[in-house]
Image (cartoon, rainbow, N blue to C red):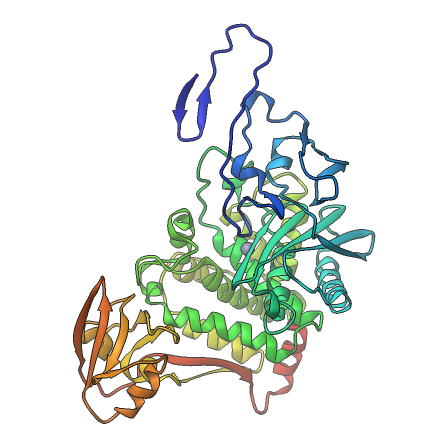
Length: 503
Ligand SMILES: [Zn+2]
């Protein structure tokens, strides 16, 4: 046997008809896309750890589970007791499963489609509330598309005792990791709804409507694509918008999510450096973490804001008749169901056909360019009778000194170029220990505002050393807080557009 690449072996069969491969996999990571084994559960994302041969890729597969007799199995795979069955490797790779003695299950139906809700881990599901809310946003999404792409669907929740927020989409299921347990049906419930609506929307957008570069998916290498602003951007926008459209979110809850995206957008100076299309291509490198400061943008945030602008432009061009959901519907029927991947020009062509207007500037200046979004955002808000306000950040450190930090340990997470923090030599990951000689106790901002009129001398801990810094005075504001609200007196046409947008 020869190892050819990091994940590929060649076997000299020399005439033998059958080969058996025994191997072990270290399953010790617990998030929405990993595999994990403990005395409580066997959780597998097959794409992590199952091998395949090119020759047998399309053959049906049987998977025999060796688990305690009283354990249940949550999965979208067909099951016969402890045997799971997949039509081919592609289905197996895309079908995670959780085997556990503590699964909690319920279900709901929309039209003829059955939706399963599985909870694993310490959790007290509020079934009535879950089924009411999930039925509402599921129904709204299906109504816009006209049909659901698969006959049965499973939400697999891994509820964790610590803070977690992560979801991964699959063809007939999703795994969602959330925590801490005690907040999931309290403060974190809006997150549960947000990620669930997002992952459900992926059943159409990504699992069916697929970027051409990922059609078919190649499991042996990175599948580069510039279309993250469609896959994740449109999904982020639509996931939240469907919570509003279905009445699960109030307008205030929806605006909170939108404010979060605006805040992330304006806080990230990477927007002057790297386009969303370029950032999408690099998702394989550091797409899910901040990475080098100011280098790149998020396909989720920028994609969501561009999807909003696109939606409003279509509404405006069609006298509020069509929105972005109509574009996604056409892509589903004309591309996904026809077995075709979607390229950027396909997407642009459908946008232009439905709206009857050119999207050249959006693609050249904003998707592939780094032109500031302010004007197109304001124009979109104005059309709907909304307005975006920005005021100096409430936090003294962010507004006056130009840095953000984690409250509990004062670890620096963001620095505004040209601000006192920047000029004074503060670095990301520095932990502020004291202000003017006073040791901090999760009260950095209080001490900084207390010394508002005085020179500010900080001691920070950096790479194992204590370092003294002096922050110079700069008379202006740096970070701002962004919020969207309904205008005081929207006019008739704005009210009409607003109603059409959230219908
Ligand atoms: Zn997503």
